[in-house]
Length: 260
Ligand SMILES: [Zn+2]
Ligand SMILES: [Zn+2]
Image 1: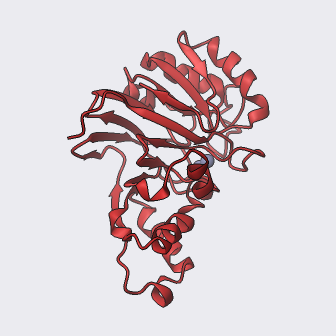
Image 2: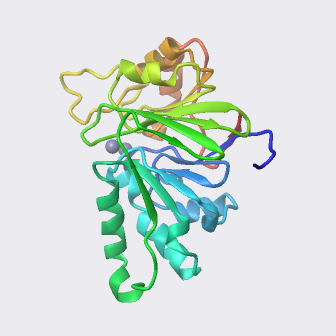
């Protein structure tokens, strides 16, 4: 096992589905080698943070909506151009959709025409409630409320014993608070701005910052990071959430690394 004392999370983007100029859709990297969602411009996002895309060992998908997987073909293409075997890349995602989207991404790259001799990435489908255990980390999951199957993840770094959680996209869902209870921090989406979502009109099934704050307060997490919203409203979101959640609320910067 590696002997290190830190767990690090680097935000590659915090924007909503259509990224703001100079930002990207919410995605982040754990310990420089576990990627969570891809955003639109993954390869450049990583290189701008001085991270070689070939370092990525695992890709965790929160769910398979386009803004969360658009860069998957680019990542595969980067590996292929650099002659790195795709089977070195392990992809964890919702059982309903992950294998189909990975196959579509490889078809888009015309794998059978140009790379027929190359292997497939290793796909690890998870259903909500499934766990995944690795020598260096442990994942637990619960479901979300969203139009496609989603996984809210709790990630424990076995090297440091630290754990944190991230929701992906979800409407307000008290079960998430149970799942993430006691995490060092929670990364919660706040697509709908500084509000509580009205369930009668929340057809896209996202959260507002006040919904995220209720989850964070109920779960007694150490800190709340809001992501996946219009950056023009991030200060309003932080202020609104701070009225409900007693801990510290932040909207991270693109490229920012937090250390647990
Ligand atoms: Zn999204
Ligand atoms: Zn979504």
